[in-house]
Figure 1: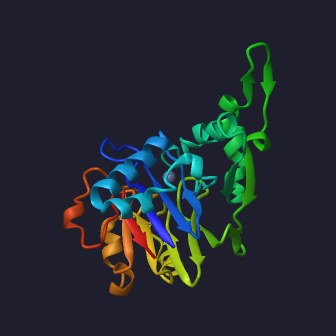
Figure 2: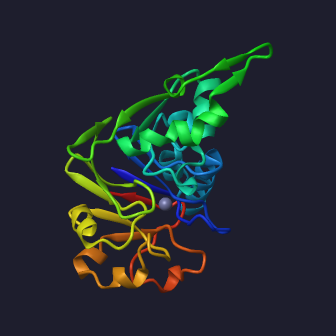
Figure 3: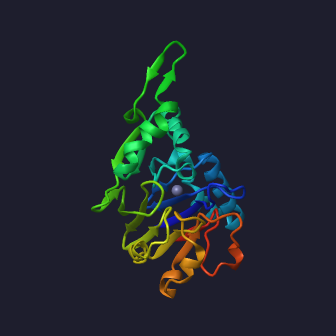
Length: 257
Ligand SMILES: [Zn+2]
């Protein structure tokens, strides 16, 4: 399994893209969240990989990092820094590829993502002569990410768990071929959630300020065996990545898991 860091910033960032990861296994790609200017997010990761890696390795790593090659997106929650690019991604599938975008969310995200987020801008299209009404199912092939049992997404096995955040949000435990990645998404500091994620080989955890996020200082209190497998994302522009005692993901990083 491969984990790509595409966006590591928070909603206020002027230095980074906002939360975007991508998991690749056996040629299958699952985007985790889909922020603003999503094609640019992917291109910037390709450009960073090209600078960091020898040419052939960079080409191999970047081969699928294009929205035309990504058909499945998992949205962890409806905050804009995690999903503002979803409209454009679905429009690209609709207009350019004549296909639906595979969308994976927990039920509580599905309950609001169309009626309260997307319908006002996507529910009507003009063909030059008349307006057509479109539905969620016209654009998306949705499947539920269960909070009770394992969910299969392509070759990946996903377990999800609610986090402590402003709106319903799912943390993820993704397995493939005996390897695993834990992803906190947005959450307050939650030792029970960290115990759930810490069984994974790599744990991607958020850090930021405020009651609905996790303070870096709280993560420092964790056991070394947990901190050692942790990679931080969703950090503020002011976060000193070079001084961090916990490893930090930077955009363009590729982690072989
Ligand atoms: Zn959030």
